[in-house]
Amino acid sequence: MPTMADVARSAGVSVATVSHVLNGTRPVLPHTRQAVLDAIDALGYTPNTLARSLVTSRTRSIGLAVSAISNPYFTEILQGVEAAALEAGYSLLIADPHDDPGHERKVVQLLHERRVDGMIVAPSAHPHDLVGYLRRHAVPTVFLDRVIDAGMTDGGATSDGAGGGVGAAHGEGTPWYDQICAESTEPTARLVTHLAGLGHLRIGLVAGLPGLSTTSERVAGYRDGLTAAGLAHDERLLVSGNSESAGAEQATAALLALPDPPTALVTANNAMTIGALRALRRQGLSVPDDIALCCFDDFAWADLFSPRLTAIAQPSRELGAHAVQVLLHRLNEPHRPTRTVRLPCAFVHRTSCGCLEEPGGSEDPAHTASTTLSEKGIAS
Ligand code: HPA
Image (cartoon, rainbow, N blue to C red; front, side, top):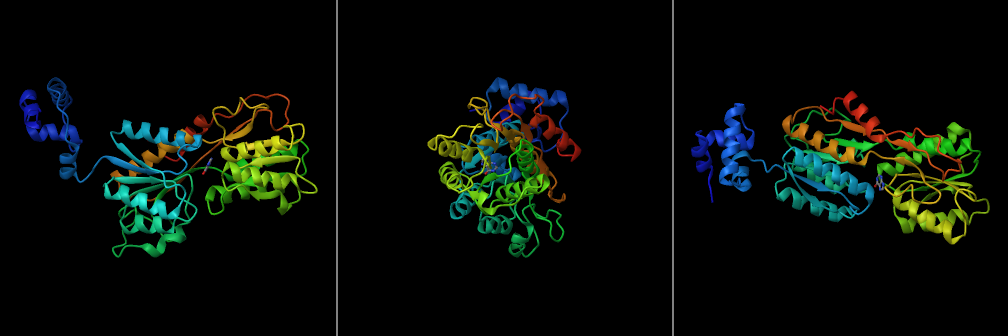
């Protein structure tokens, strides 16, 4: 097997120069760099990443802990993370914490023991142990999708004050970690006002798992929408589907059993949309003639349902890609101030809301997301 010394000899440079080219530890003149790359290619040299890690104390790997990887929303996030990590020369170690706090803490510890350089985590509804662990061990961390209340974690500070950013700048009330998520409140309000604008007075919400920020923000958006439309808040119309299909099916059935059931429904994620549709079908109700439906989350086949689903599209791939960028910024500049980035969603206007045809001009989430990112200085 060819060694680094063989590459150096073949390229006519020192072993240190080969190392700088491989590890990016120092700038190397373009023609020298090319000579090294050509020699690597000609000899079929494969770098030993374990040996490299011993020298650099970096593994060039990222730990990703995301529950419900089979959910298309999270699968797309994963694709975004994977593509961005690959482009930056990082490999990924992936774990599914199954939205269980104990499991979550365990898988994150396992990833940390593999010495990933940093972690991207979609936290569960009860992330105390997880956050405490990451902070105690000063793991550079980006929380993804669900944001965490900064106050929850301050008790776990290390004695030297180092945080997840290994000394990241964070003031009182500011988290020690970075976060990236999609807007939830305003887009949910928009679904409600859209339905209200079509004449609906009783609009139900099938909400997600209590404890997740995405749930509380979408509930807040539902209430904001009712208020903006001048509609009464009837708490019986707000039910929990626990973020999953079966829960949503039950919750929707409960809504339909009310003496004065809703005439329109908002579902707070893709899985719950499926559950709600099952409940409606069981009751023999058709959308939108018997009940209108708008949902959070667009998915690849949302326009194949009949009627086609009016939905909020999250910039899932961008969330994943930018989570990697935020983490790499943190690794390169450990003391930079921490930040919470929110990406905008797009309203995708189809027909399940009761509108006869698409007015056209649905917003493009990728476009709006990148605009906001460059405004926030993240895209660079
Ligand atoms: N968060 C945000 N959007 C989602 C989720 C979630 O957990 N699940 C499906 N869509």
